[in-house]
Amino acid sequence: MTTSSEVFLIGGPRDGDVVKAGDPGLVEIEADGMVHRYIPTKQTRPVDGADLPAYNYDGMVNPAGAQDGVEDAEKRMASPLAEEEDR
Image (cartoon, rainbow, N blue to C red; front, side, top):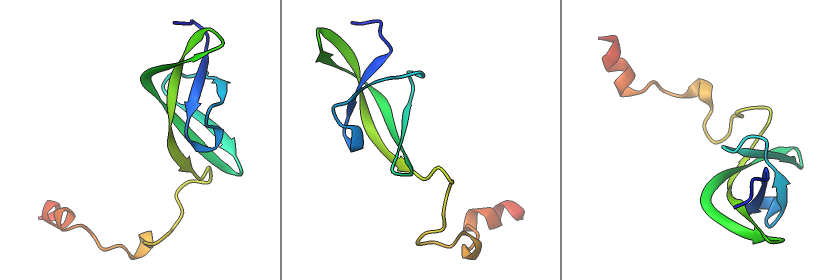
C-alpha cells in the first residue's frame, strides 16, 4: 500500500481520475457549479504500480445550501411527534 495522499475516484463526473486528497474521510470536487462528493471504501485500485485507496461517488450538493424543491419548508406541517413533546 502506498503512503501517497492520492486516491482513485469511482463514479460521478471524475470516474477513473486520480486526485490528491487532503482529508482521508471525504473528497469534495467542484465542477459545473456543484460540489461532488466522494467517500472512502476499503478497496484499492492499482495505478502505476501503487495500490491507491478507492473513493466512491456519493452525489452532488449545491454549494449555496439547501434549496426549496418539491416541498416548501415554510408550508411544512409540524410532526405529530413534535406536538406530543409540547404536552
